[in-house]
Length: 97
Image 1 (cartoon, one colour):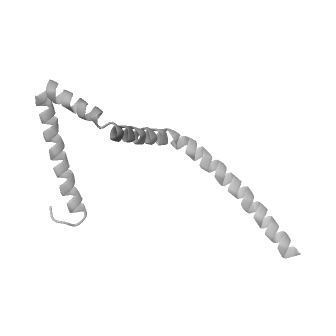
Image 2: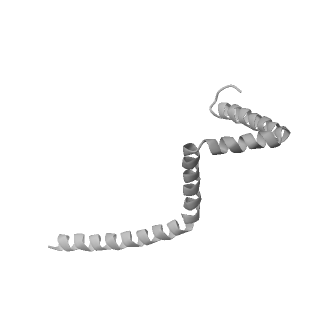
Image 3: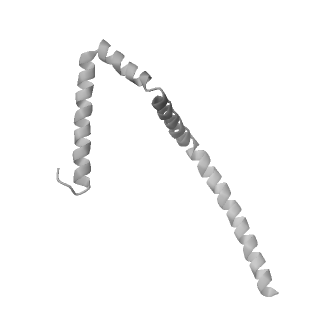
């Protein structure tokens, strides 16, 4: 009988602690909510762009048509950044640079 009472007491303590932990989790979740909203918006934007690929292609085409020098400059910088990224990634993974 005493063991059963001890188990019920332990269960009640655990249920109370579980409730407190849930409340803390909700509070932390509220603090991170703006971050999750931004991530959700980025995901929705990526899905939309996959469904409508002509929109970003049209924007790039318009930029190339309106300001070709600027576009080439940024394309070159992007290519250089990509090459740097690949070299750093290889070095990080232990490969040759």
